[in-house]
Image: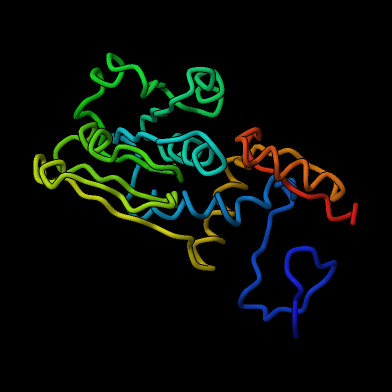
Length: 223
């Protein structure tokens, strides 16, 4: 049967595709976990990021803020890399231990060769050679953002230090359930703005400007 997408009041679905959400989690703030949450949880789990690792999260937006929360919850030392100095307080409130303004050459120089992993959440063009230089030997950049243009990388940015570049999409049903259970146990949800359906156009315009902290969620009761 057709489901008519995310604005449906009810749908019929096979039980193996259903996820259980704990009563401990507020539904509105849990909704983005099924997108931004699993998109960042899955690669951090796959690469076993945790205690003893230095993790940088590149970009503090809808994906990045979840990467910070999960990275900190897994026990990693988390640094946010951002072009916006104004986001430092927000990053640390989310659980980041450090903040680097990537437009400041001195701050960038101070963290060269220091990270085990960089979770790249940026969907705009950016200098991959610069960020590869921030990895230590055997370090990995994990791309979860989707820039519109192909990456441009100098070969020696990878060869020097035996560095890797990888990518990750969304996770499957079992891993998504694992994430939801982890979030219930650790009280992790997305930071959202709950909006009425009548405000969807304004919200979309704000999203294009990056004016959202950090996900819009539509209150379906306002349909």
